[in-house]
Length: 120
Image 1: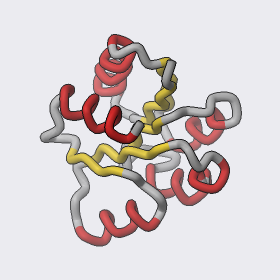
Image 2 (image 1 turned 180 degrees about the vertical axis):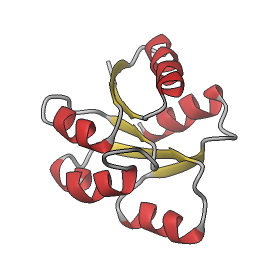
Image 3 (image 1 turned 60 degrees about the horizontal axis):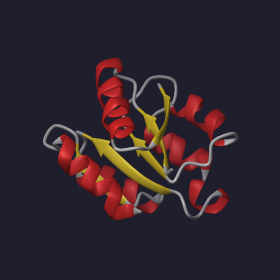
Image 4 (image 1 turned 90 degrees about the vertical axis):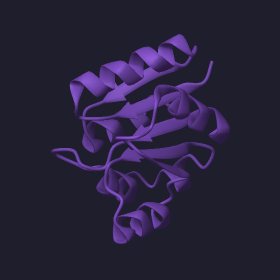
């Protein structure tokens, strides 16, 4: 069973993503910010991290800087799901090791599942 770590501060979205990936037979773990996600990385070795960028306490960019997922767990894929789409942010996302980016406001559940499966 593939593991996914959902890092999203909006409760309603996080619940939708959890339900969606549970139905897709993933082992689902979740965190409300990057700080919680870093703690979870110690016990959960996710195959995919679904990551929001704008969150309180620790956002997605800071999470990627501090967690250094690509060094500590090189097989883990990071899919950033955000409404930020300015060129500077997109460059930062790529430079910090994101494998894929989707615009949150336009990604359907089917597209999200397809994107995660393509990373695996």
